[in-house]
Length: 124
Image (cartoon, one colour):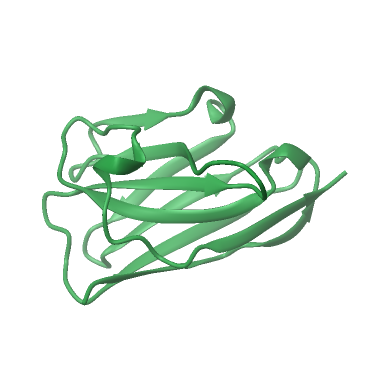
């Protein structure tokens, strides 16, 4: 069974940076779009960013544009999320998932193979 394994979360002060990683165990995701989502307590899971297989197409939520950057290393079967200028409202559990759709979509229903998430906490 495929499992995504997220890592890199932690506690950081506002204005700081974190780099999240997501490794796919079980198989490669050749040709798949990869996405990052997040879920704060009491809130629905929301789209953060996505990247196509070739990295030629990216899609970002408005609230992270200019602060977060998604990238991938297909040789390592890993996708990254560089998060800069973090804000307390970025505090959430961050998940990655795979999608067969191109160009990258934003709906959670278009993604599969979710991981357990990595916690990001930003203090003010």
